[in-house]
Image 1 (cartoon, rainbow, N blue to C red):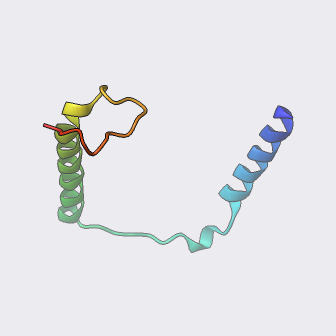
Image 2 (image 1 turned 90 degrees about the vertical axis):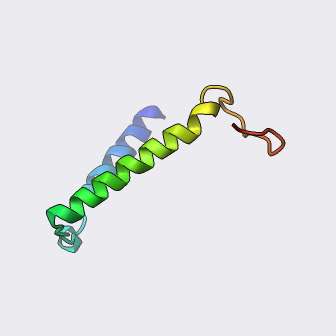
Length: 71
């Protein structure tokens, strides 16, 4: 059974990688646009880490109940 799954997965992977390369669109960004996107990504990462810090590793695998106040 595992062998069949691996062959099916490999076949699907090959099919997806070979299908219609002509539909790929090229996007060009200026250096300023790229820097803006990089800075936005860093800001999002830092904000997410700072707000997630108080709850990290305390609630592994469970939803935080609405009655619990987060610092």
